[in-house]
View 1 (cartoon, rainbow, N blue to C red):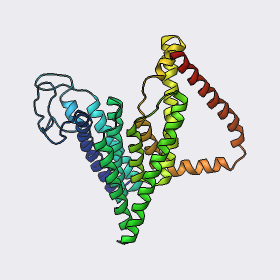
View 2: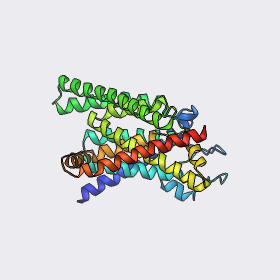
View 3: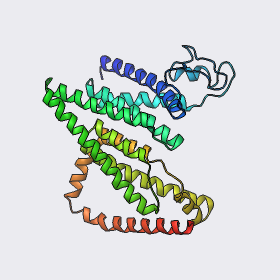
View 4: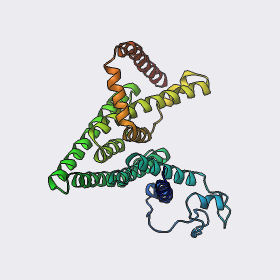
Length: 310
């Protein structure tokens, strides 16, 4: 790594941290229906407007020692953590795609996914203003990439735009498939409408391949999280009834979809190559039967706990 690349990475890191600071505002204000532009950042307790020194990403929280300098109300460590995570994501995107329009576009996509993940964890909702604006911006990104890749051709721009629209539609279909499978396993409606819009948004930014892999990874991750939470409830409460009670509580799928899309974007090619290699080898038959048995037992287990709860 030369000095030039190091300097660029430092700039990208602090740019990401600054945008992460804005994401904290978005995550707090959008669900509350408050403007993200006004009023400026302030203490939620005493309404003291933050000064320049207090508003420095990551460092501002450390300098304040995690408390408002006026009323001494504790400031959650989540704020600098989100700023640091956003900064790291920006550096990872830059290292993956270099100086290109893809770096700009996918950095923005990661911002949308991170904000939606946090909001879904906090409120169990995926606000329309974010999913819809992300979808429109994703299609605009596809058109821009097509225009550049085709040497400023309107035909190339339209081709990329159509690909984005088709991937968007595919994202909705995949959501419907996940919803049907999840509803069969849980015996009730497994998802909300915001998840479909999130899948469509991801398709608008990426491609049908990324959407397919994102859906598969999201389902696997959500299944693992679902089983882990139900199992943890059983162990902690000491009975199967607690696990059944866990099945009646909603589980936010947005974070799993966002994780699946992130993994697909960064390592999708490697995963697809490994999958193709595995499917062409005799080893696939060795895992097929145990996997089928596991899924059958999982289906029986979830249905049994649903009957206990009812």
